[in-house]
Structure formats: structure tokens, C-alpha cells
Image (cartoon, rainbow, N blue to C red):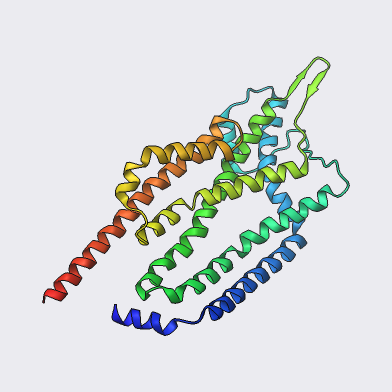
Amino acid sequence: MINDEAEIEASRAPLLDHLIELRSRLIISLIAVFIGFCVCFYFADPIFKFLIHPFEIANGLFSAQRSNGAKHGPFDLILALINQTPTTGGNQLRLIYTAALELFFAKLKVAGFGALIAAFPIIAWQLYRFIAPGLYRRERYTVLPFLVASPVLFTIGAALVYYVMLPFVLWFSLSQQISTGGVTVELTPKVDEYLSLVTTLVLAFGLCFQLPVVLTLAGLAGLISSKALRSGRRYAILGIAVVAAIVTPPDPISMLMLAGPIVLLYEISIWCVWLIERRRKKEDEDADLAVIN
């Protein structure tokens, strides 16, 4: 502990030096975002096609069912999600744009979305490098795993949206179309609205899946305890349900798809904070024994 404190004292610098370092870290992060934006804008069409793939899955299943005269069932959708192979069923997927530059701005949005995701590891590393001098050596090694866990959890949340939730929501939306007599009501989404739905859901799920990282870091800093998390479980579940209802489309299935995993992650967070408290208690007991001896 004495060596750690000496190391932190040696790393102390005037406020101006910290501001200069912060500026350099921000510049590096912005450069990473800019490079990611340029690359993603160059590949905007393939990225856009990638984001449309869930709609292709849903539209292919719906078209095949309609052409065969079959009923719409969730089990067929599950099989389509497993195969991840869209079938046109004789009905081509159509998206529209109604403003002259809407598609161009949609590509800019795709590029910005891709740039933030691609540059996230660099941004996280720059943040860690900025705060690392103020941490004890033991704390640095403790924080490092969270730099790995954070993008992994974000990817899991985004994958849940991309491979499960979006195809289901879009398939359900297509199944609500009406074609009786001389009346036809069909889903033809705008490009910008579809991209807004995809990016919003991916970011919402990815950020909500950061809950274990946030709560565990709070427990590591002593801001929260496992006992407090257990006693506040019912309020946490209520808050999770409210957030899930706000960020997901207005249907109970989508809400449960988000709320269920987050409640599970909350329980995992309690376990992680409990392990931290247990380890800290053991270290304090060992330190007391060392002082006595």
C-alpha cells in the first residue's frame, strides 16, 4: 500500500497538465471516430444492407406463409431466425424515402452509428489511460477486465436486437397488414424511420446491458453494497420495466425481451458486488493479522 501511495504521489501533476492530457485523449478519440466515420461512409451501402437483414428475414417468412396460405406462427419465425436465410416468397422487400436528400442523410447516420461502435474500444482505452494514474496498482488490474466486459456485453445486447427482437417485431408488424376487397393496407417503411428504429434499439439494448459493469464498478468504489442491491430489488425491477417500456416498440413481447435479460444481469451484479465485498473483507482481515504479528 505504501508503494502504491508513493506511485500515486509521483504521478501527481498540476491541473494544467491534467487538462493538456485530457485534451490529447479527446483528440485521439475524435480522430478515431472521424476515421471510423470515413470508413463506414465508404461502406455505407453494405452496412445498410446488413441492417436491413432482419427485415428481410421477417418479410421472407411472412411472404412465404402468405403465398402458401399458411397461418402465421411464432415457431416458424424461430426456425427462420435459426437459419438466418431470408426467402422472398415472391414478395420483394421495399423501403421508401420521400425527401430528396433523405437517403444521403440516412447514410450519414449509418456512418456515424458505425463509427461510434468501431471507435468505442479506443475511446474506452483513452478514458482508462486518463484515470489510471489516480488508481492504485491493484485497482488498475481490477478495472481492466471491465474494459473487456463492456464491449462484450454491448455486443450481446446488440445481437439480441439484431437476431431476435427486430425480426419478431417486423414480422408481427407485417402480419397486421390488411388486404380485403378493394382495401389494401401494407407496411412500407421509410428508410430514415427504419434506421432510427434499428439504431435506437441497438444502442438502448447495448447500453442497458452495461448494468453489471456500472453496478460492479460502483461496488468496487464503495458506493453501493450487495445488501442495498438486494433490498432494492423490487424497485430495480420496476425501473427496468419502465425503461424497457420506453425504449422498445409498444408491444409486451419486445418489453419482455429487454426486461428479462436486464433483471438477470441485475442478479449477476448483486453476486459480483458480493464477491468484491468478500474479497475486501478477507484482505482487511489479512492486513489486521499482519499488523498484530
